[in-house]
Image (cartoon, rainbow, N blue to C red; front, side):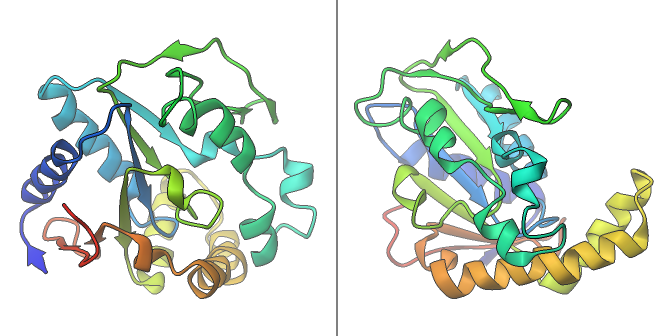
Length: 228
């Protein structure tokens, strides 16, 4: 395991991306529990890759949700609902991951859901260059339905208790209720992650694990099965 500065981590991840050769756009999963720092990490990495001249596609699982009525059909705080009902994996594969993968035509859409209107979304497609990089952040990305569609798998690891504290800090800035955040994490998000770990074993499939509990002094591990 290595440990270093934030900049050193981002440089190491950029090197890992550069080392993977494909004949199609490189599809990078940035997985991990809520409030682990996945979006921030993906955004930081995008800046570095673009500065190196790579065409970067940024997308997130939050743009592949299903409408609220379906998402919360088991109840707002259901862990099973969070894991099984929240995301449209078929649409994610159909409009983004498969077009960018082997045999795809590289004509993709980065979203299938409009959060503002709580309805499906179908923006005009964009064509990716063959050497583009997709940086996709979200939860449950290494589950069986998706695990084989990534060319590089990064898992951002943070103790669950620390994610609660981070969520409280983030929620305060967004004027969310501390009690509601606490319940969401205790009843829905943490148990759904425990279900994910028990059924999909995501860290077993990760090429790189980022230990992000110390944001400015992270550690990272390249997994033994990885060729990176």
